[in-house]
Image (cartoon, rainbow, N blue to C red; front, top):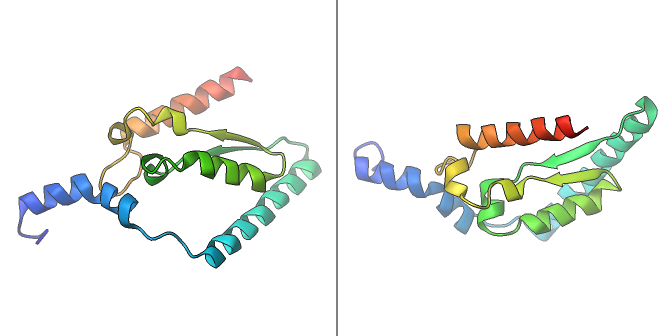
Length: 130
């Protein structure tokens, strides 16, 4: 249908992100726990490297579109913070909650140029604060 119908293509490209965010199945509990355990190990490796080489790590969460659409970004932030073992965590969700469609491509959920610029400006401002 997408190859022959402009209307179908428009509907798909405008609604695919919403469809994906709404109907994508969550991972099983066992698979999610495995992923979290592996992430905790990687954060520990980062802390070990920081101690060895003398730097202070920070983690910036660039939330995917569905995390904001579903309103689950606070849970993501809380989960990452619980895994990070004291590493500073910075969420960027508040940058995008005012207009998701303004910052993300609707058909795949990646940042569009406006969203990318918003992230870049935020990171530059963070660096200048130091």
